[in-house]
Image 1: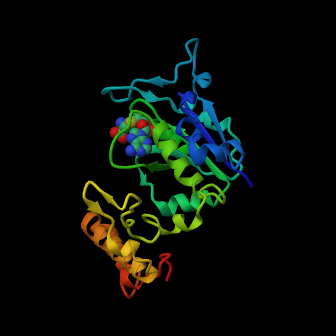
Image 2 (image 1 turned 60 degrees about the horizontal axis):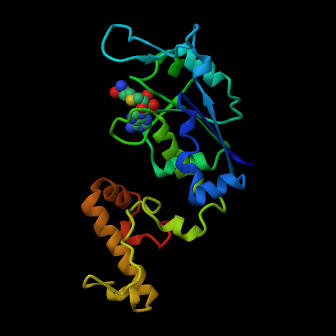
Image 3 (image 1 turned 120 degrees about the vertical axis):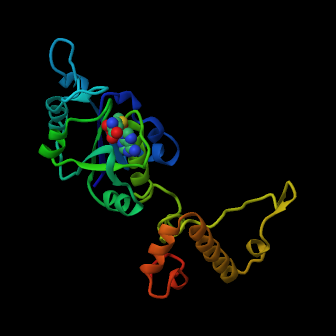
Length: 243
Ligand code: SAH
C-alpha cells in the first residue's frame, strides 16, 4: 500500500519543496509515496475568505479559526491516517515515532501559521500535536517537510542501502560514529589507521566506541537511556543495535 501524505496548509506551494529532490524526489516520482497539499484558504469565511481572527482575551497576533481549520481537515478522507498538528507544544518527534508512522498508511499534517490554532479544533478533531524541536518556526510547513522526509526515507526501496539505515544516529540509541572518505590525507589530516586496516572486527569496535564517546559527550540523556535499555550497557549491543 502506498504511503499517503496530505498537507493541509495556507501555502500549498511549499510542497513538494525538498521532498521533490534526490532519493525522496525519485521515490515520489515513481509513486513509492503520494503527496498532496490542501489549501486552507478556500475554506475561509466571508467575501475575503478570512482564515484568522484576533485572540480572545487580547494580545498580539492572530489565531487560525477553528471552523476554517476543521472544514479544511474534514475535506480530507482519513483512511486510517493519524491527523497531526505541527506545533512547538507537541511531543518532540523521535526516530521511534517516525518509524511507527512510516509503518502505517500515511499521515495528514496540519500546518499552523500566525500565533497558532484555536484550541477547540485540536480537541474536537483529536489532533496529535508534534514538535520538531524546542524552537519556534513561522509556520508548520518546514516542520511537515521534515517529518515526511524522515518517514519516507524509511520506506522499503527508498534509501538504497538498508544497512545504512540500521546503523545511523538514533537507530541504535546512540549518535553515529564519524565518517571519512578519500583522500587518505587532507590538509595534513589522516583517516584513522584502523579504518584503512581492512580488519572489520577492529573497525566495528572502533565505530561502536566512537559512537559511545560521542553520545556520552554530546547527549548524556541518550547515553543514559541506551545504557538503561541494555543490561550490559551500550557495550553489550550488537552492531545493528538489537540485543
Ligand atoms: N505562538 C505559538 C507559535 C506559533 S508558530 C507558540 O508559542 O507555541 C506558527 C506555527 O508554526 C505553529 O502553528 C506551528 O504549526 C508551526 N511551528 C512553529 N514551531 C514549530 C515547531 N518547533 N515544531 C512544529 N511546528 C512548529
